[in-house]
Image (tube, rainbow, N blue to C red):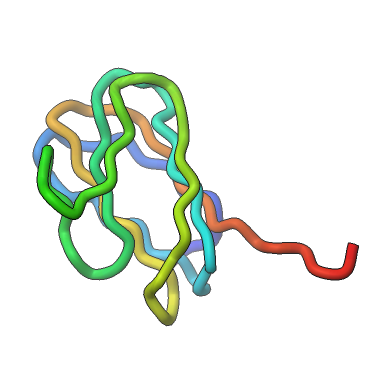
Length: 97
């Protein structure tokens, strides 16, 4: 497990799992170079390219924030038909400011 953020270059058609050392209520997944679409799921279920139930970031530079509904340390699984660069970070809510 590791801290946040984490970065990876995806291998075509292989699931990449990023495990964080704590649980987050919300995450951000960033398609850093936009070379290919990125499919992902939070938790212990593998995503599929174009698969039902998988979140998707299009083949463009951009990000999405998503609420985490699983307990324990946050785990994000990603896949792509190509080899885009991704970054995933846990979002910590600041209370009392």
